[in-house]
Image (cartoon, rainbow, N blue to C red; front, side, top):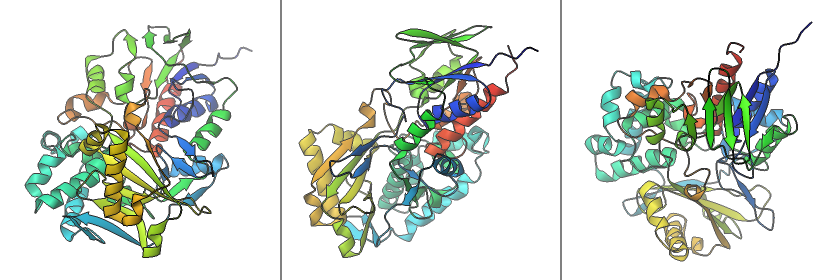
Length: 445
């Protein structure tokens, strides 16, 4: 009796999307090779440990309710989670003053966006009845017409365009924001700590999960330090080319952000609309900075360390301290135009600007951290930005349909292609599993 030859599949990218695709393909009987450009796996996650063992998650770090696949992976690979710190009051810097919450005008505006998002199908945002109108408006332009005052418009723009897409409100369309809200289940889930997307962290950091996912694959499956430079396909096969070899297969999963996928040379060339999509989906611009203190001093004043701001270089902060450690970690985020302005400064002036903002948000003790550690994903050769890519205004109708559509033997993954929880680790896993299922359903060749 003869046996069918196992399908060969190459996965380009060893982040969560690529690893999830590889796991499904392997369990489905395929022979898989994962080619990762970096010398490490995990993609947009990175954990740094200080000399005393304090763990700092420099990239993606949280999981929360309704993110069932990530929760199942954490449990399935024998890892645990711990809750994000939740102590005391939040704070909002509003028009030069601190308050415990934004005014009701901001809440009403976010509620309106949630209602509009309910009209968007996250699998096909371009089909919404008002998609063309919403895609022509930038979020900033729309807010300028509906917000009751400039401070409310600025705050909501920073909260949503910045906090969700790491972009300026004038850089993303209203439709892009509505898609993102619908994909993540609404603003309460997306923005929340306890009960929201920032509820839990993984013991050991997300890289610990990525390493276990890779280790569960057959030995030699994952090859780091192997950037794919070109992909050629014909009627019989597809070949991925690295600097030191060629990897033939029946199918390829490109598990990368579209902006990076567009840097690969394809032969034959990608269809015009898919190639155009890669040019119209730039990565976000975020700076994530960890200020490390002897203690989480803000708790003594009944403060949570969770803040948002309508002004200044820092849009939001969170308490990222680790349970069982006496040290306090206050993590600050800067997005879009503010992040770019900080990048223009020398390291010393940049740190001074961030610390001055932290003083305004959590008090004078913020001026003297033991350490201030930053990681700029925009300077990372194999990432070029964070959190994710977003289609530019006016692009969803013409280019959105090419986001997930396979091109011959080339299939697309990455969190940007997800329908649920796009932009998050959950979305990355779901996208990888979807691309793998597409390949396993292909007719045998």
